[in-house]
Length: 435
Ligand code: ATP
Image (cartoon, rainbow, N blue to C red; front, side, top):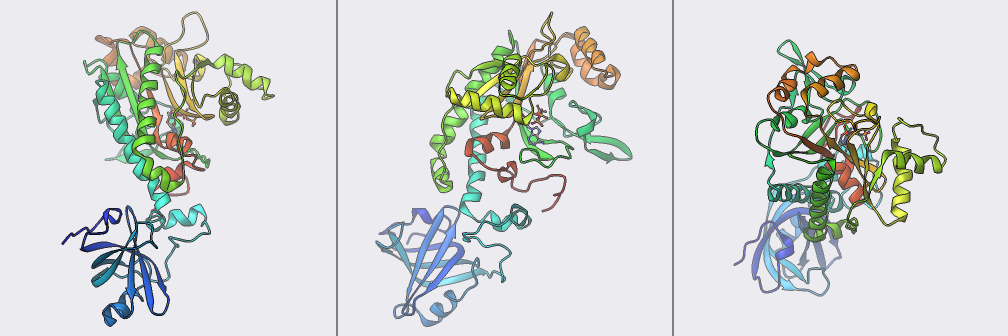
């Protein structure tokens, strides 16, 4: 006897008697015969109940269960040309593991799409929909592929603190918490720590962890908690070394998702294309010219913004490029830790954009203590506030650079999702702290 409790897709003719478990997705009663559609993580399976052939009590209870109840059904596997799997199960017994209440807060097989708020309010139910859940199978695969690529490149996985006394990206977007009577902040990024690690000899590090941003903006690409995939590497000659490392990693990840994620992509009815390499490198000034050419009156120094990024994305897409770097932003627009380009108003920073949206920021860092302090002062920061960070630069720091990628933003662009919240199990935004 084969016992298979959790993967309906592996049940095949010739298995004999099996036990399958899952949620009762649907029940169809056609008089002399009834069908129960059982759903698990991997698909659905048909339980067929010919009234004359199954025990009357079993028939009566199994075919009247509330939808979404959880059952384990034992029965004989029979070939069937009426079902997708080519098999059906004729039940001989079943266990009701948990009966579902009625009415359901949200339909699982409803054709009509519920509002996003309603879906997020009942996220556990929303996630029962295979196409909604598939995003998280792909997200998990993505994180595995990232780890694989980073280990192959000799990066050490690290965990930096998520509560600290200061932030790296500016005070306005810090979440303040009460730390035993003292003010503390949730980490906006692991920036300061991953750079400090460069002074230790751990010369390539990466982290995938939550980053918190107190951004009171209700857009489809901002949330207050996201997963940041950060990398930092020493001994670079220029920021081009960081960009080519990112390109290799992104290529490995997207190819891997296309190949190993094929099943979940088909559940979502999606296909992904692998961005053409080498990823073009545009300068900020070139992008500004493109944006101005399209009629958006931005000046040198302005943020390209959502609209500007989109214009550049459209132009690049016409040229066949989904992924490209935008490099050498104005120094004033970028954080203190970015190295300036000597003799210019620009700096060694870059963004990686995917289909007209920023998915990552990176750059070469200023590793020279005096220049770093100078840059902080120029940007109106007090070096004393960064004492613990600056110490790591005073006693020998290699040249280094790195990046931070919002992994949900990558998923959104890759899967063409309408909102970053679709790629987060329980999203946090200014108006959502629960569930
Ligand atoms: P944006 O200008 O789009 O708000 P940012 O310049 O604040 O982004 P960085 O601080 O450079 O972003 O963060 C690096 C990456 O982290 C971004 O490219 C993005 O992928 C991700 N990210 C940043 N803020 C958010 C957010 N609020 N929600 C989701 N992802 C984010």
